[in-house]
Length: 194
Image (cartoon, rainbow, N blue to C red; front, side, top):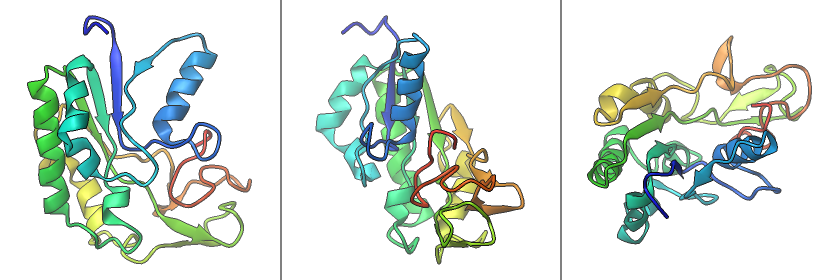
């Protein structure tokens, strides 16, 4: 594998292609459907946390990467939003960004966490969604981390607060259009429409 070729490295946000694909798998699948090949070293697995990307066995592969997107946080904060803190997660992500930069990765983007909710109508409406406890206030750790990415992970090249899957009238809920499972099927991961 040559570094001169474009190699994209998603860290976090993965999943099985057919079962519950993560964002990056869907991105690459869509690219191939459009005959646009995207080589990738996908370093996320279902339920993975930032500790996976800190593992030297994984960091060995950073040398082959041109661009990386880090999408950890959701599993690190967990269901109750209290498994880590914004400062601890920030320090861990900054160390991964440093390792990527040390491996001459040209562009590193860090993404925010996504909404986490339950639904009684398969996420067809906002009224029937309930944000998980500790994922429903601006002062909650996952939201505070996400809203302040540039402060928390200052060494990244870009910081993306993911708003495209959030309901405009309530950012703690998933975007809806009246169709069941429109932007999520599980309240944690986006669908292809999301």
